[in-house]
Length: 139
Image 1 (spheres, helix red, strand yellow):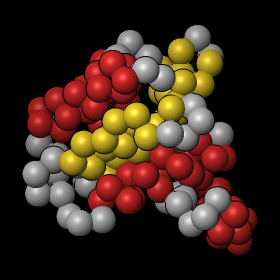
Image 2 (cartoon, rainbow, N blue to C red):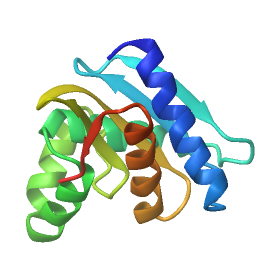
Image 3 (spheres, rainbow, N blue to C red):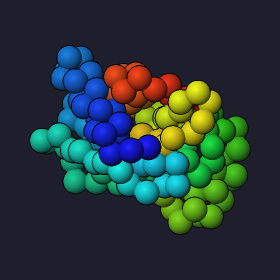
């Protein structure tokens, strides 16, 4: 994941958010090793939205699946998700909005978004990924 692609993803997600009149979003894009490549928070986001966005992204990357899949797993195996959250240092938020970013099947990174409903966060993430010409995997 290069910086240019990360910024295109954020720009695409923000454009989607404005077009669909979403609540203010916090957006984090990490590369495949988990390093923060780009971050944006719209005016009006609540104080800890950034941490939630990072938790969605970190959880998806650590577990190798989109946070929608983590959400389903949390419903079926809450003790496992609690243990996984502890194992990765607490930064795992198992609700939609964390999407793996791929190109040709290769993992490039992950995006995490928080601010609106989880489904809308995920839709903005997918729009941002598509705007950069990449593929998203939600789980």
